[in-house]
Image (cartoon, rainbow, N blue to C red):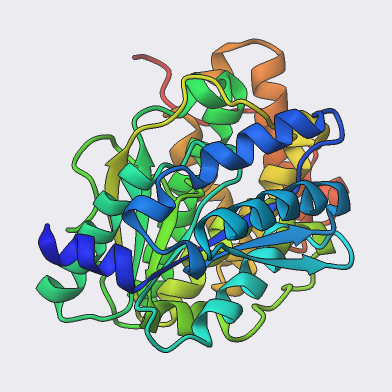
Length: 347
């Protein structure tokens, strides 16, 4: 633990992407950000934290007030990067990571959301897990995931179900790719709690070696619209790029809010968003459409949302059909593909 505390204090950089809904007041934005950085000065290095405004001028202005006040009081504070336009969380994170990678003393690089859900207390545990995985495996390319104790309660039932589907299928695709390239995916550093890896958790820590491999270059768009890579499939992209670089995953349990204090999930088309989360890794890893479809049927029966008839099944079908279209299956050819719902007749 002593080594971990020293690493968090002296060698850990943090990126906080910033975009707050206009529905929030300035006071609410201020409160959320102050909660996010609580404990950084005590346990970490506030000067190695960078807030990246993703085209959010109002949010950046509120946070700049906090930065100036902290600097006047403590003599140091965090940095702010402001992107001129909203490009999505993926782009904001890349800019922040590149900013921190220019500092040679930083060995661990964390991504934390801006709503206070990703605490400094849990960051220490995740860094400790990453350090162990790197030392134990001999592989310096490690991506640590802060596994949530539950996804359905904080996210809501539907979002939790679809995140589970994407997490299960993403791992299927990574394992398929690994097998075809003569590798086995090491999962021994992932949590023994739960049937699937929480790849969609936004609380992640990278070793410097992994961050260099994942963030130095822009990942390909894979021919998909701009929303796919940097807005919808952000966590999938990080996981796949870490895999392609030869990295491994360590999963460490963390606390999570019972309800999210703020979210913009309801503003997205859920079927389109989930389809992008499936299509991007399939194209990047060169997974045939028919294999992706089989992975879907393998995993959708593990969910309970299809039992909501007809809406649950209809939304699952919409995700599959939209993903297949993105993978080159003509839209008219997808009609009826999901109608039979292949699966067991008896429980």
